[in-house]
Image (cartoon, rainbow, N blue to C red; front, side, top):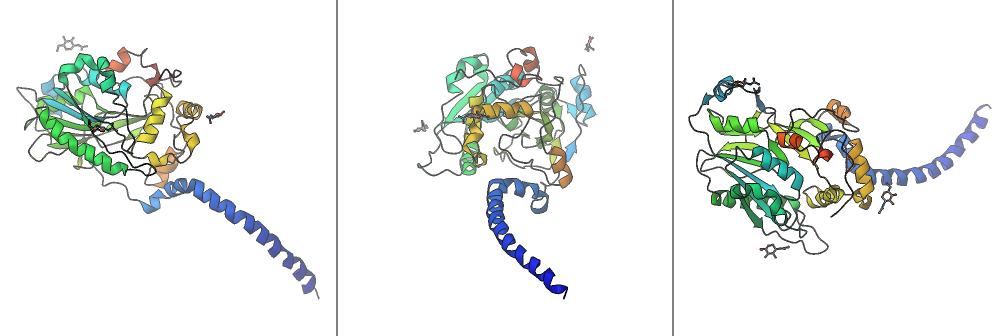
Length: 364
Ligand SMILES: *[C@@H]1O[C@H](CO)[C@@H](O)[C@H](O)[C@H]1NC(C)=O
Ligand SMILES: *[C@@H]1O[C@H](CO)[C@@H](O)[C@H](O)[C@H]1NC(C)=O
Ligand SMILES: *[C@@H]1O[C@H](CO)[C@@H](O)[C@H](O)[C@H]1NC(C)=O
């Protein structure tokens, strides 16, 4: 008797549920479609393994110690003559970072070997920013070996595979380094423009015998400016004692990494249009999933908050690290242990220093 009254009200929900499901399923699908990348990044610890771990070489440094003392602290010995250093990097549009790099490393580098492509990695024609700003770098003219890589333009409506164009450009570096006059026993640095080894790292490479033939350089990673230190995760830059089998790369090449060896400042631009250019030009341009990602006021807001330009989660391999790094990058008020040229010219580079996140209006 008491069963019936219960059954009738129970029959109603299925219809209501059907309607609810009809509404919920498409909403979930749309949600998945829009946030698919985010969801997949959140579960990265389940589908991706961290890169093989490095053996870290401790790095000793204090002001005003003799090179002999510094070399011996690392278990190396002082040379009678410094090695020559060749600094090879591909340049896209990082004009301010390039100015800092050239000034900072100038005393230690024999030749800056700069390759600039006339297309982006994504196959779009690109102005030659270095060539057209040569005057800014005239002070280092006699140390610069510059060449233009002729890139391929993607047929309209399609994309070049950015990773293929990028690796072709890196291969072209080998020829340019030879033309710059490198020989066995010289130091060759392989990095991107925005990966800047510190001058005291270069002095060790120059003056110490017994350094490993290939070392990765562990760089402090910053985003947008030195106000937003991310972590020490930057490892792609390398220092090589040049030999017959040395080839220019920007990938894993050894198990040794030299600790705290410099700075990697990503998206450290003075103008919003430079952010937009880089976002569409570099190998991860597929991350620009919506047109409004390139909206100038949106970009300005994000870089003042230390938030991600592509609305993505950090690339981490454990849930603990992922959750620690989610959200905005904490702000730093320290401008200590940064490139000396940057501090000397703090007025010019205000946008790279604490409190300077607002970019000046475009002058293009
Ligand atoms: C640095 O070393 C030189 C000589 O080795 C010494 O004359 C000078 O006072 C030192 N400077 C500092 C700041 O310790
Ligand atoms: C790039 O440079 C090469 C060689 O100078 C030239 O043939 C090619 O047309 C250029 N491509 C673009 C997109 O300017
Ligand atoms: C850019 O975003 C702002 C809000 O953040 C909006 O007011 C503005 O209309 C957008 N501009 C364009 C060109 O979409």
